[in-house]
Image 1 (cartoon, rainbow, N blue to C red):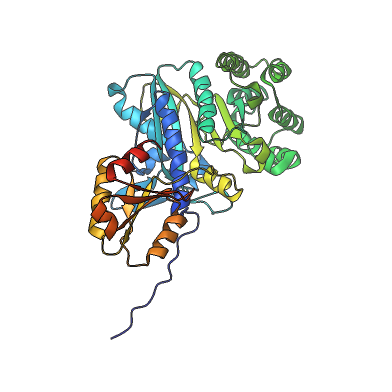
Image 2 (tube, rainbow, N blue to C red):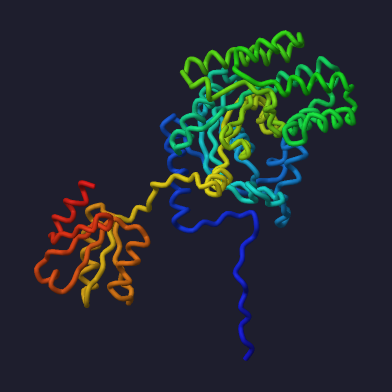
Length: 439
């Protein structure tokens, strides 16, 4: 008989897998974000991981096409979703007659990107999205609501160090048209979107190689690198170009600014930054990214914007939308590697019940009684020594221990120990429940 070959356990790169104590913190963040969405009247949605390729790639753009996991199953050409926005557009187009608009939805789920794994980038990641979709039109206060939502999300997960950088793609759309490059706008925006990565000189050279005159390329770079407080930054750019689309962008930014002020957001935590372009072709107007100024090397930790034409591939009805997305897997990884995770998150286990002698049945009765009273607990019924069980309880961080020996069973009073202070009391079942209810 041949021996079974032992397979070395390993996982694919680019996929996060956490130890339970870290998973507890990850789930805490997810739950807090979900609560913010629910508290702001966003409704839950869960779309399939797999979509028809013609749906998912309808308006993705060349850069995204390279990243998708695409496969053939029988006669079906399918892809794994790379974001949650295109599936949203497909869902709304199919179900619009059953929905009430503006439709506010959130979705927290995994997306998949077949890119090369590297620091801060994953092939499988959780995204937390919230979107507002209007039928026929969606007024700009929706854009402001999404930006306000960003403030609430990061407050909920205890990250106060944020800066929301806001722009409007109509500024560059209009300037490209005014300069005579409307047929190259998409390519120009892809290049300008990388300006902070490749630098001004390389951006200039790349634009010139594309066929943009050097003076025009410089003008595009100058406006793209402008940032600052909304009012002052707008003053610098509002008269640069008279193009109708450009001026529409100016008007939208001015209006958006009035709503952000109405929400009384901290003006030190948001600014106008025209280098924010966003890579996806479906963004049309307002776009924004959120960074942590003290850790600018993290890049964007939240992003989003307005998409006025996304459903045009799936429906004759015009539906405008705006949304935000937090890449939770990437954010968690960055916080973890920089020792910035929330420290006070524990699992729900409140009590460990430890038998002393042959009392496991009595311990299980205690466990059942406590659970009936809403207390999260467990019995350590392993064969290890009493000393080892106490060490294990301390290691997992359980705050209280109940010790049940034969004498305790006879008297129906049990040793109730506070693992933090070391205090121990002899209490009845009812008294233990009463004590735990106060905590």
